Image (cartoon, rainbow, N blue to C red; front, side, top):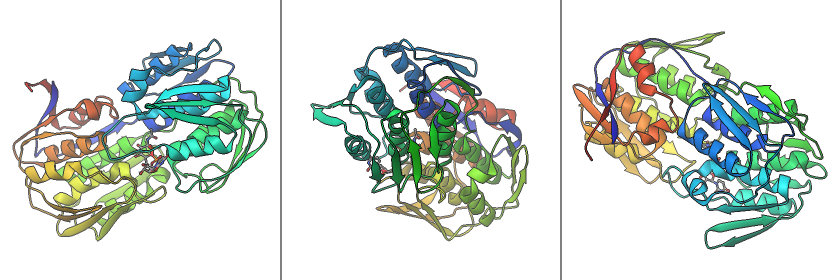
Length: 419
Ligand code: UD1
C-alpha cells in the first residue's frame, strides 16, 4: 500500500503550476460523446478518475486516449449504450455519461454510481430532469435503464446540483426544442462546460448564473479546448503557505473562481496578491481563527476546500466554526486531525475547531479525496513525522501532489507500507 511520509515543520515556499480541473475535464469528456468530430483537450491532469472515464468511453466504442497532458477523443464510431458495471460502480462521475448516452442513442443502461465516501449521493435530480425531458427511467436491482427521445423542457432544480446541471446541459443541446433551467448550479465548471459546448456548435446562454437557456437541436462538431484550471488543487497548495510559515505562488490559479477561499485566507491574516499569472499567498505569523466557514454552492465557500481549511484552522489562534451544508457526512478528517493533536468537536454538520499551537506527527488515514489532502497539509505543519495512508484517494484528485510540494521545500515522499 502506498503512503505519504512527511517530515513537518519546513516552510513551503516557491512556485507551482496547476493544470486543468478534474471536475471540468470529466464532464467535457462525457460531452465529447455528442460530438461528430475529434475533440482535443489540453493541459489535462493524469488522474485515475480521468483514466477510468476514458475506459468508459472506450467501452462505448470511442477512441479515447491521453498522451501526456493532451486527451484525444473521437466518438464518431461509438455504438454502445451500456455502461461497464465495474467502472460505473467505482466512479460517481460515470453519471455524467447518462445524459450524453441517452441523447445520442435514445437509450442508456447504468449501474448505480459509487465514488468517494462522503455521505449519500443520490441522483434523483438527474433522473427527474431527464424524465421532464421525455425519458422513461426505470431502476432495477441497482441498474438504471433510460430510453426515449429527449425534448427541451422548463426545468427547476430543487437544489443547484453541479452534476445535475451538467447532465441537463448535455442532454439539452441536441434535444428537440429549447430548455430553460432554473436554479442551476453556478460553479465555474458549469461555465466551462457551456463554453466548450458552444465551441462545438451548441447555443447555451446564461451558464454561471441561476437560469440557463439552451437552444436545442444542435449538431455538434469537435474542437480543441483547454479546460479551466483546478481551483481546488490551487486552493490546497496555497493553504500550504500559512500552514507552514511559507510563501506560495500558484501559476494558473484564477482568483475570480476562488473568491470565497481567498476571502477566508485573508481573514486568517495571510498576505494575498492576485496577479495576472496566478495567486500568491504569504504567511504572516500564526494564522488567526475565523468566526465561521460555511460551505454552500458556488459562489459560497466550496465543500471541496472545507477539509483543507479545517486543517489550517486547527493550528490557528482562537476558535472557528465550520458548517458543512453540501454533504451530510464530510468530517471524517476531523478525527484524524484530532489524532495529530487538533481539538475539533463535531456535532452533526457543525465542527468547532479550537486552534492549537502545534500538531504532532502520527500515522493517519485518508478516508476521502479532500480529507486526505487536509491530512497532508497537517503533516506539513506538524512536528516530527506523519504517515498518511490510503493515498489512493488523494491521487484521484491531485497529480503527484508530493512532487509539487517537495519542489517548494516540503519533506514529503511516496513510500510503500505494510497494511
Ligand atoms: C460535484 C463535484 C464535487 C463537489 C460537488 C459539490 C464533480 C466531478 N464533482 O459533485 O467535487 O464536491 O460538486 O460542489 O464535479 N444531490 C441530490 N440529488 C442529486 C444530485 C445531488 O440530492 O440528484 C445532493 C448531493 O447528495 C449533495 C448535493 O446535492 O448533497 C451536492 O451534490 P452535487 O452538486 O450534485 O455534487 P456532484 O455533482 O456530485
